[in-house]
Structure formats: structure tokens, C-alpha cells
Amino acid sequence: MNTPLESKGSGAEPRLTSLSHGGGCGCKIAPGVLSEILKGTSALPVPKELLVGIETADDAAVYRLNDEQALIATTDFFMPIVDDPYDFGRIAATNAISDVYAMGGTPIMALALVGMPISVLSTATIGRILEGGASACREAGIPIAGGHTIDSVEPIYGLVALGLVHPARVKRNADAKPGDALVLGKALGVGVMSAALKKGKLDEASYRRMLATTTQLNTPGPALAALDGVHALTDVTGFGLGGHALEIARGSGCAVELDWAAVPLLDGVRALVSEGFVTGASGRNWAAYGAEVALGTGLPIEAQALLCDPQTSGGLLVSCAPDSVDQVLAVFKQHGFDAAGVVGRVVPRDGGARLHVV
Image (tube, rainbow, N blue to C red):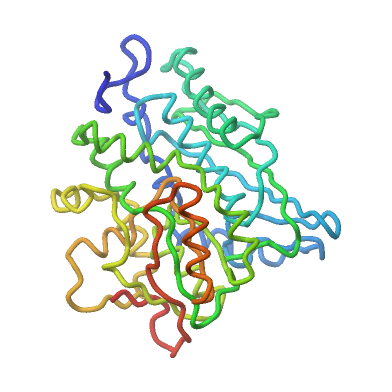
């Protein structure tokens, strides 16, 4: 069996991760820089049919088609987070489709976005990336109905993902209510593992754990959206648990309190952090939103790094009424999300920090 440290392309091709300056959702532009770039776009005209746009940095756009259907549209793409081309394709496609689930919808089709250095990578390797993406789409029950390709300096792959949802079941990230419980669907630590992989320090067992979580489709989304007690929904990706919890807090006009001891972590991640495997994106995330975070005393030394750790294809974060927690956890369990658990709560904002980690 190949190890995750070997290049799995053809011939003497370089490792995929060696061709990218960042990997997975760690490629995202830092939150503060992104806000500066987008600050003028909010003035654009918005049709009444657009149920969700860019106003609260939600996971996807939602456009009302009729009384029974709304179209979910999203796109996501990035540079390699792993060296195996097939695995890279699977992870990137799973991550892109997740945003449809995060709005409470069901995916219907995808378009492939492909940018590859054709003078560096063989057509066989590029083909394996596309095969991996197609396998994730098959698992989601959707076709890749088209796409676009370019010759690029760095390898880039992702999808435009489209889905459908009933307009009454759209779940935004901005509708949390004080008193809500917060439930997280997947364990954290993908960014840390990717940093170790890029430096050749991730063992095979850890690679398999990383692959298992990043290729697990967030299929609980539609079932969660059908629960009356679920008020807000998002997925945890490049801005880390801290950043996406803050998006819920800002959009809802509330604050969020996280119980760090309850936050699930992938096995082995704490040890990797102690060895110095932290992504640059983690530091950029903290620089962007750390001023809005209050860290409690007595937290473990790795808490800040993991709070900001960019998650590629991360878990759903659900804000729900306390009496709906059992239903939410049952949905996660039914879909095979054994790490899901309550990680905090939504509280009224008292004028201080929007995110409290205790």
C-alpha cells in the first residue's frame, strides 16, 4: 500500500501538495481581507426572489423559483490538500457539495471547475482527480453535467453545486436564537493534519482518518432542515469553528459560547499541534477575528490554534432549541456521524465579545 507521503501521480511527477502554496480550505482569503474586497458589493440590486445572498456570509445563494422550490447555487474549489489525485478530487467535490446540504437542500447536479499545470502533471493524473470528484458526485446521487478547464500554474479543482430546497426549509446561518444549543457534526483537526502531511510527517492511520472525515458527505442537512427546532445551519470550513460560529453570532445579533472540552478532535491532532504542525491560515484567521473572541482561563495550549484551524469539508454546525437536541443527534447518528455532539450555546450579546470559549 502506498503511504500518504508518496507521490501517487504517474512517473516522476512532483507531489501534488508541493505544487500549491496552500491546500484545501486553507487556501481561502483571510476573513478580514475578504470583507475589504466585498465591501462595495452589498449595494448591488437584489431581486425579491433572492432569499439568501452575501449579506451574512452564508454558505450558498438561494433563489426562489416558486412556492414549492428554491434553487441553491454554490461554488468551491482549491489547491491540493493531499497527494493522491483521486483522493484530492473526492475531497474537493465533497467539500463543494456540502454547502448545498448546509442550506438544508438536496443536491441535483454539479459543474466541474478544473485548472491544471498541464506541462507538469500528466493527463493520467489529471484524469484521476476528475474521477475522484465524479465518485463523490455519484455518492451524492448527482451528475457532473459540464464544467470548465484552464491551464493553470497550480492545480485547482472544485465544483459548482446546485440543489433544491422548499423555501420554508431554507436554513440560513443568521437565524439562531438565544438559548439555542450548538451541535457540531464532525471532529476538528483537518488543517493540522494537512500541515503534517505537507511536511511528510503524517502516518498512514492518521491519513486514513483525515480522508474519512473529508470525504463524508454532509447528508444530514435536509433532515435537519425539516426539524422545527433547528433555527440556523452552516458548515465549518476555511475560517475554522471560531470563524463560522462568529458568522452565526453576527448574523443573528447574538453571542456564542463554546465549551472547549466538548469540542470533538480527530485522534492524534493534539500531539501534532504540540509538534508545531499548524497552518498559516490558522494564524490569519485569528488575526482577522481574534478581537471578537474571549478565551477563558485554563484552556489547553492548543485551543486557539484548533479554534481557528481551517476545516476542509468540515462538519455541519447546527443551532437548535434545547428540546430538539436529541432529534438533531439522532439524525446525525442515522447518517453515520458518530462524533456529533453539543459544543456550546447561543446567548444574548452583552456588548462584549461575540464568541466566548470556556
